[in-house]
Length: 309
Image (cartoon, rainbow, N blue to C red; front, side):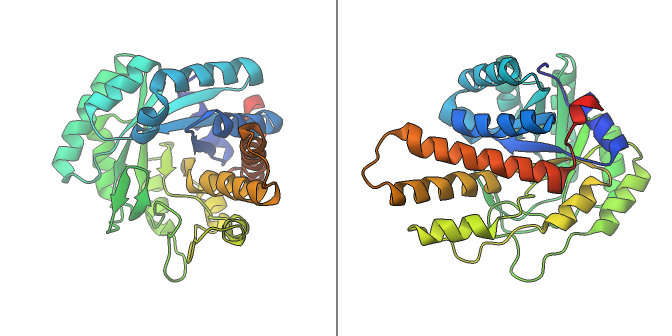
């Protein structure tokens, strides 16, 4: 129905024990696949844009496509800056009409993270925009974000950080990671850390980054049709569903969309070698993303019919 902030979305999600999906968009087909699925499932959604996506597509183009999606679907959409590296990028996103921004100071020392985050909160709140920050470090590589180490979030620091900065939501590190290669051994999420943070910050929305399940079906299709993706693994969906029934109100998924799109395109081109109309292979990718997001809403997020809640 509108371009909104995440405030009301998260309040409903927290009280309803579900999460809102935050899906990274880079072009029209990805956006359409996501919002078509959300319309079918009557689910609110967060469309998020990284600095790399802003550079690739242009913030004005992305904002205009989101406006068109709202008019076409009638669902509530928040347009979010993912992993904003600095105030300059945050300002660019806000000026373009984004309703939510993330400042990622997780790579800084604690006091500097607090300082930078407070600056962003003051700027954004004065313009009616909500702010997400991050505490703790996720390992892995995705888009412009990379780290070789993982540092779990300390619950007491999370409490202090929220109080000092005034952020509206907080991304924490409990074992998820960026990219398609999340675990070398058995997957594990630190639900004890999540529970302690939930107990110490009752009602406060928590965010999980790096939360793609990395569908082995899509990996296999990619590899069957010329790809070389070896050893990819993601977060088990039952763990994500458990997190979404707790304080986690936003779950980020990017890798899953990339794999769905790429697998469908590879398969289409291999099976239709004389085709060169991009509407054919991009349409196949869009359809696969739509199918994936519907599945995520039902089996991971639990956000179906959240527009009516």
